[in-house]
Amino acid sequence: MSRRRLIIFAVLAFAVFGFFVVRAPAPVIALAAEPVVSIGSYEITNTILSAWVVIVLLGIAAFVVWRRTKDVEQALVPSGFQNLVEAIYEAFLNIAQQVGGERNGKKFFPFVFTIFIFLLIGNWFALFPWNNVIGPVENYRYHYLHEMEVSVMEVVEDLEHGERSLSDHEIDAINDAFGNAFFEPIPFKVDKQDKSDEIIHKIRKHHLTDTEFAVRSEFWTNPIPQGTKAEDLVHEIETRLEAAGIHDEGHHELEYAMVFNLPIVAGDAELVKATGPILSGDGFKIIPPRTLFAESRDFSYDAFGEPLVIEPAADGSVAQLCLIECETAIGDFEPAVVPTTVNTAHLGFILRMEEKGYVDEETGETTGTVGHIFPIFRALASDVNLPLALALWSFLAVQYFGMRGVGVGANFGKYIGVGSHAIVKGPMGVFVGVLEIVSEVGRVISFTFRLFGNIFAGEVVLFISMFLVAFVVPTVFFGLEVFVGFIQAFVFAMLTLVFASTAVGDHDEHHDEAAEH
Image (cartoon, rainbow, N blue to C red):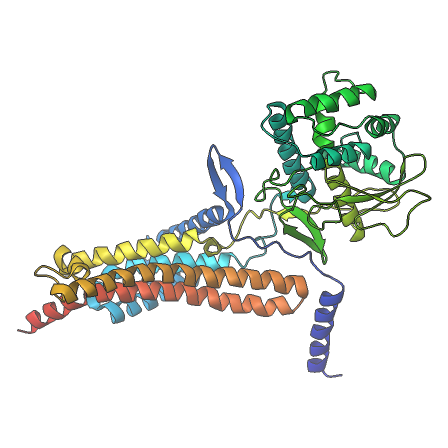
């Protein structure tokens, strides 16, 4: 086999291996930049941090060049890094003078070259392997359940203050929830997940405590009566829990019994924060949860709310847990669909993880962290705030150059349509002025979303290509993004240069004519 065929075969083999064997988790695509650290109320996002690093790198590069140019004899014979910097500098200066003229080109050059070099290094900085892969992990399990806990605690407070009303249907659901209770709160904090795995494993193996049997029995034999007022509900629940042998000994047992077992009510979970992690493919798909009691309804399987279906055994223990209708009944007992609580949501979460191999069925231990990385570094322009800020600075710079070149009156006269400096006067001038204002606003929007769209889309393409095919194929897109990063920086700087040259164009023509005469 020839060397060329061997290389082609190896490349294809790596691509196939990356597609079928080495599959990365499905990436989480987020438009907003993720916060890395907070200083008081100010959040430092990963794009801001990346921008600071790029600024420092540019500062170091400028310092290195300055050190070399201090020695005149050495500066006259450039080599290495200095030679590269001078070549880029001279090339862009020539372009600025060709577009803006000999005199104005030198005025425009510092501003437009700063935009170009900052965006160029920023775009290429995003292609290094530390971007989007290094950072703290937000554990989905903790985040999802913590938000549900906070939501239910707010519900308990509302009930205690009589700020909620209860329907008979909701009271029935509460009796169902406590009648199938896993009383012991299943912790979900990151440092207690081993403990929660142990509790869940016992439940899966049908090891219910005497306390859980007592709670179930109390709510079966003495359910909360219909018509109970909301402000009396907490007392009714506490009375039955105390009758089951549960007493508050300073550790908030009664409160947490309610928080972890009270059904989640529609609208109580904040849709923005409490996102329901659903396993999809090889990763998690994040969707807002639909919670219970939106209207009178039975508690059938809800893929968003994740209620559990329980097959009870004859002795009242749990024979089987599932996330869909259990296929068969055990004896005379029909499967019971349990309203979603913090505890049942946790159990449902673990069942979903188990389906995809994140949980060891024998030991019940979670085999890996499933969460969302908050990367420390991310492409600068993938945050719309940076392109918008540069677009606004570009707009202000063009107005500044215009005022310096043709005067304040002439520069703003084109937007008004009146006065001696207006290009077009009268009613038509006013209409033209409005068009000029719309044009300026359109430039800012165009500048912003052209840069943001291309860089953000490139980042998504790299994510998806690495998810689909781990090897070879992403290299092609990395090469493409090197080109896109350069083009976007160049286009942004050149358009700023062209608009600045246009703003002083008439003045230059009159100045040149006067010089000839």
